[in-house]
Length: 120
Image (cartoon, rainbow, N blue to C red; front, side):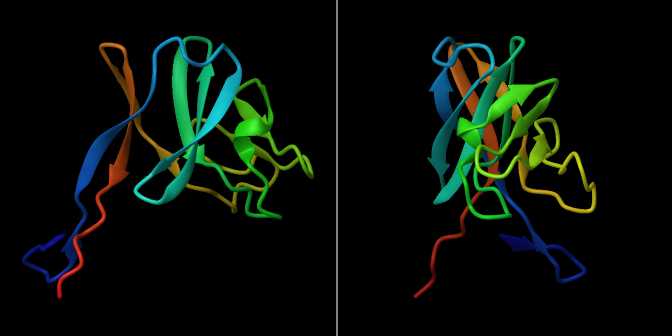
């Protein structure tokens, strides 16, 4: 990460391939690991969405949850998160990470912050 003129760190992003088109059935999710982060990728009505995979309530994997009307319901305690932005559908003050997704050819890619190299 570089610094801007105000001395704040500028975040750097990259696109990472997480699966192939056709790998997920409609309404299905799967967990992928990108830069050490667990991300749930979902295929819903021809579009792909990516949010943090871990439910903030008790840590369940959201990729195994029930998908309906643009939300995923946590399989443990029914917390519901919007796939488009990671907002908890029942309390919008709570939000989990959400990631831009694109399809390049047959590759489904997630935009994620690059992890800076450790300096000795």
